[in-house]
Image (cartoon, rainbow, N blue to C red; front, side, top):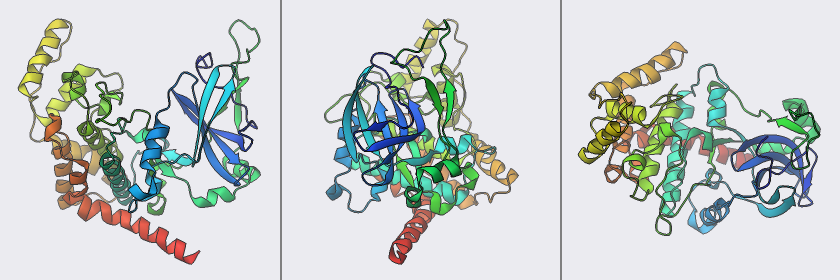
Length: 409
């Protein structure tokens, strides 16, 4: 609620109508730079996601996505993999001027699916198809000269069925529940000012537990291009990805601009996160030193100049107890057996067979090289053995099913 202030969020009430056509029917969620609402487009009679940015934000993703959405640039890619804004407009409110972005609503993020599950696992064929689409999407945006800059499972969305638009607002509430309001109260007992909403709205849950997502439902959209940039036009040095997936060059080479290779590191961590029960690198309250220790334990020694810098950091932080760990050649196999195989076997899911396991680990090891220049391109990842033999065939099943439905209709 403290973000409802000058320069911050715009207060929204269920039933509000924006741009003379978008009627708000529920809340989808929020981020640091926006609130996102489910609205009914009264002009097209479809549901949309209405992203209302904070007044002090500078939403550059519209220009990035406009560039990526040009049909002539993506004739062979499923265009649903990249979000497209169907409308962009500005509104004025008590907290300032806000840019509003309109796109297709999503069912849930991969984080939502895992958080809604007791076991935090997708079915094996679903994981393969999701990862195939993610790598295709990253390869496409890289081919257009753009770095995503914020790859993690919270920014990967599962799409809604087209049948969703056929639900009336009454049917929507009947299936998913009416909006739940939480009253906003001031500690001093005074009235709520106009820049703050009278009620908070609990976001709607359109999703399912990860293990219940079926293969035909596993179509994704890579979202949130707020950190995206074009390295040939803009030099970016700081990574804002979560620490667990942040590329190590952001710490050890802070004066070297980030580039496509930084996406490859975060992509690899995210792939593990999608396929496994737990993240590759772990820690709720972890810090940079602990993260580097985990990386060395799994991947081997740091480049010599990085190791020297790390030692200097630890000397300057006299309280630091972290020492360079000895890497274990069994680390990859141990991690895989523990978080991929055994977790699936415990839940009665089919495990990996050895050839797929070896190909999967080989692909990730190539992507998780400390030096950015040693990592493969997204195109090379797309051509890896695991992608060609295991992931892409699952994605083709989804595409073939979708094509068959189009023919029938």
